[in-house]
Length: 395
Ligand code: AMP
Image 1 (cartoon, rainbow, N blue to C red):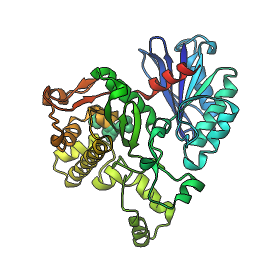
Image 2: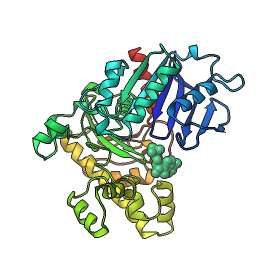
Image 3: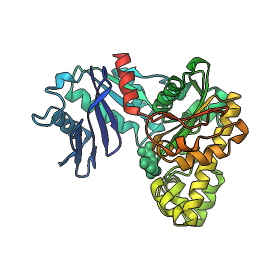
C-alpha cells in the first residue's frame, strides 16, 4: 500500500509518499512559507527537484498542492489519489494520553487538542494538517504518530521534576521527551543490526541533530530521555541551551531587561552551539571555524560533546550497564569527530573505537573496535519510514 507521511510545522509541511511493501519513497518534498507567500518543493523518485512558488494562505492549500503534484500527468508519482491508501501524521505532543500511535477519530482529535497547551507552536499546526487531509481525502484512514509516545514507559522517578507535586497533578508538568519516533526506530534497528535480543538489551541512542536528545532503552522500552516538558531540556543543541541553572533566567532578565518571553526566546533560539560560537548553529560551520582556530567554535564543539558524554554516563547508571550505543541524526551520522570525542570520555566502560570505521559515514555500521566491551554503531534514523510502518500496522 502507499502511505502519505505528513509532518506539519507552523509555517511548513514536509511530506513523503512511501510504498510500504517495498519501503521505497515514491515522492517527497516540502511546502514552505505557508501563510506568508508559499513555495512547494516536489521530487519524484529518481527525478530532479521541482520548485513552484504559489500562494498557500493555509495548510489546506499547501496539502492540495502536494496532492496535485503527486497526481500530475507528467511528473506525478501516482495516477490518482485512490492510490493513497493511508496517511500518517507526525504529532509533536501526546501528553500522557498517548503511549502509542492511534487511528485518528474525532475523540483522538479532541484529545490531541487538549495537549495544545503543552506544545502551543506545534500541536495546533499538526491538527490543521489532519483536518485539511480529512477534507481533501475523505474516507482515507489516518494515523497519529506521537513524538512523545515512546517515552511514556519512563518510570515516575525519571519523569517527575523536583517541583511541587500539585504542578504535575494540576498542570501535567513532568518530563515527556521528544524525538520518540527516532529513538524507537533506532533502538530497534540497533538491536537488529547488531544481532541483539531487543527484549534483553541496554541501548543508549544519541539523536544528535539540530535538535538533540539521548534516550536509555532497556529491553526495548525507554527508561529515561534527556528532553523534558519541552524540547529545551537536556543536551546543548543548535540554538537551544539544554540544561541550565534555572536561576540564570531571572539574572539575565534583570541584566538584559527582558521579560519571560524574551528570556525564552534567547534560550530556544539564540543559545546552544550558535550562542557559544557566535558563528552558526550548523555543525559544518563550526568544524570549519574550529579548523581555522576560532576559539568559540572550538568551545562550542567541546561543550556539545562533553554534555553528550555526561548524559551517556548517567544512562549507564540508570540501566546499570549498557550493551550498545547508537549515534544518529545529522551530526550523529555524519560527524566522526563528535563520535570520537564522546567515546574518548567512555574508556572506563571498555569502549574503544575503530578509527577507520569511524571516519566513514553512510549506512548502518559498527564503529567500535573488535575488542570494545560495548558496541558502538552509527544507525541512520528514518522518521518518515517509522511513521509509515506505524501507519500500516494500524490500518
Ligand atoms: P538534523 O537536524 O538531523 O537534520 O541535523 C542537522 C545538523 O547536522 C546540523 O548541525 C548540520 O550541520 C549537521 N550535519 C548534517 N549533515 C552533515 C555533514 N555531512 N557533515 C557535518 N555535519 C552535518
